Structures are given as C-alpha cells and as structure tokens.
Image (cartoon, rainbow, N blue to C red; front, side, top):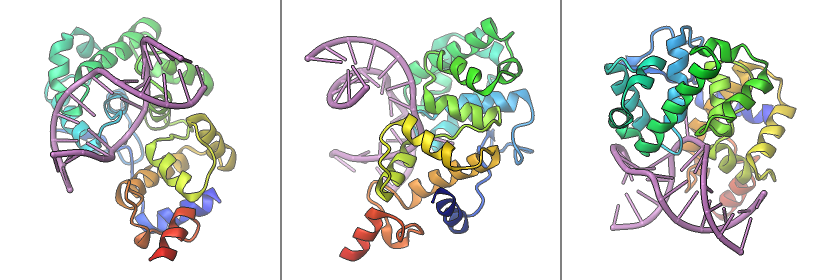
Length: 234
DNA sequence: TACCAGGTCCTCG
DNA sequence: CGAGGACATGGT
C-alpha cells in the first residue's frame, strides 16, 4: 500500500532531491547526494529548527542571512547575542523562540558532544533520537528531520502534510508515533527511500492535497477515501 | 481580509 | 493523556 502510493507520487511529481539547502543566491553546490561537510549538515539542522510551523520560503531568507553573517557555525551562534541572532532569522517567524532554540542546540553540542555534529551522529539510531529529543526546542519531527537529512540515517519524518494526506486516504493513525510506526513497519528501512518519500509528501501536500484539496488532479484519488467521495460529487 | 505555513512547549483539567 | 494558547513573519 505505502509503496504503491510512493510509486504514484514519484511518477507524478518526479524526483525531489531534498533537503533544499541554500546559500546566498543559490542551491548548495554538491548538495545532490547529501550534505558532505559539517557545515552543510549544520545548515540542515538549523533549517529543520527554523522551519517549524513556517513556510520554507521564509526559512530560506533567514538561512541566507545567517550565511551572510558567517553564522552557520556552532561557535558563531553561541557567541552572537540572542537578540542579534533573532534579527538575522527574523523572516522565519517566532524569531525570539527560534534564536533561543538555535543557541540551546549549539550549547548542547558543545557541552555533550565536543562541539561537533560528528560525535552526535556517530551514536546508535535510537540513542541519537533520544539525545536530540532531550534538547529543548527539538520535538519528534525536528529530530527525525535531522536524523534523516543531516545524519542520513533512516528515520521517517511525519509532518502536517503526512497527517493530512494519509488521514484523507483513510488511515486511522492519529498521533505522530502511530503514523511513523506504520511507515517504518511497512517500508524497507532505507535512507534514500525515506528522504524521497517525505519530500514527495511535502510536494503533494503543498500542491494538491491542500487544505482545500484539488482532487481532480490528484494521482491518489483512486485510493483515497476523501478523493473518491469528492470525485463522486463532481 | 483571513488563513496558512515541512512544530514545540507549557499549562490545566 | 488531550485540548488550548503562545510564539510571528510573509504569501495568497
């Protein structure tokens, strides 16, 4: 079931090549195939925090501003006054909260992992997840995004789009944990698959399965309870 | 004009 | 636990 839906989404939307890490003015060169440097991995972590309940468009501007200020750096984030940091990321919304979160994440890295992501990412998957969740400001989705896209390990990311799309299709799972369990039980545990699937879900949720869905052009309408109903009405 | 966006934390019943 | 509020900008 889940693989069938994946194939349809892929055929319909094409390859997604995520996570869309940016630099001033352009996509990160060499990002295809995953983040290579510590700095790229850190940028993914920062993006994961900044995009909480916020459109990626607004996050891109904030990341560009951080790049402009050489602030994709654990040390720089720690040494910058919170108020100044908040202004740099202003466009991403909740900027006071998020400035605090960025500092707490970096502070956690410095104190517990020698100031490096590599130490953190070397942990076993479940330990890594618990460590991330222990940081104030990092919840399940942010933790899994960091694991999947920055550490490049297989954790399926559930987000608001996943809930909306699959609840409309007819899935009964209500919580983050339940939905993630279902995906991870039913799919081969492969990083690339998880990355691409989640990216396709976001694409589909933004473009088709919106709050007011465009069932008429949805590639899943035949397998979707909501879609079938909508098509019958039309 | 309202509503929405790749959540998380805190409080209260 | 589950619901409800706070946190805030920018696009449609």
